[in-house]
Image (spheres, rainbow, N blue to C red):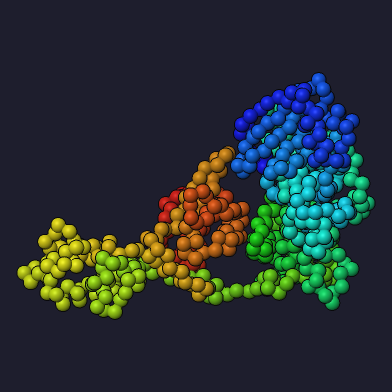
Length: 549
């Protein structure tokens, strides 16, 4: 609610005669507080103000401040304490504990989800839906966010997922720095009382610990395949990337159909590891703690999972895999998510696109085509249009006998299409007919067939300069050609070993893929050779890097 600046409508100082009424209001809303607490919060000699503001979500909010610091705010007749107020009086509201990783998501506007809660919601007893809730950290019980419970304690006890707290205010938002005041340092308090022993939240110290534990019963490996996902809410972005990296490497080692040892470590990473990244995720080794392929493979070797030997200086091979290692034996990936060998022929057939431009019959041209069995809204390709327009002209003796290149406009339908003309060439007539129809196009593959109204836009490849003389390749309009953006982005990531991302630019109907570096030539070849997109539908090849002589 306060992630963005809010608009102050009124800002009035609370008079001495009004202070008792304000204190009574706070005591009614928060019966946990006492008269002495209120004296501490609102000293008689300190300025207390009431602000009426409009938040960025167009909600009208009342804010109460002391010495310009916000203590309470009211939304829809619900009174909330601020994090500053809760540092002094933490006993208000239902308490939920999370970690730094989840808190970083909340600071970006997310609500608190149940998988991100470390303590069990039932540890605070019974509570109702839409009850004031506070969020703190596993290492510090000082409040870092405030909101309303999204479910009651009874409902939460029946589910393991879903929203836990709707966040209204968090430490570091615009309410904390209202009136350009500096952000107060987070108060350091003891860990929450109910947080269990630190042994229940072990740090990941080796690669084996990232994988399913050794005591998983191998008879039912399917039940344990998501063990990595269960610990992700407790991890930082770097730790999460480490887990994804190890999972992709181990998946390749155990399930790859194309892995032949010995294999260069660089080839292994590019052809085997990157291709095993789950569809919804992006593997970027530079965002992991290892930074380089050699470092993570060295750790795997130290753990006894693989054998790596230096072929020559700076060139290493994976020579062997210890298939009896518990981490290897206990890894289980669902069958549909395992890598499979795809031949080039099968892959080309599945990706090929057939693009057909056509025109839709409108009221203006319906009389021409109706007698040949067509109706309004039917699609026709250019050869069909030429055929039936020619038959229509000749059946009405409209061709000029003196000069057969011309068509006389003695027919009322033709005359309405070519206003202010006496005669036109055949080509001009065909253009007039097509102009009176609605353009559309059909893109079909082995998976689907989609017809879209309007003229087809080409796939546009452009470059954009970034800091430090770096460039990024942008590709637009892929979805027009039934190309799935996540799949295409992953192919580019694997093909050029560069990070990719998908954007949804404002004002544009289709998504955009961004690839680090000038990758114009790779994208062009991928579109032409694999997806069979005709060259006339691709723009931007002239931006490809020039060959150095």
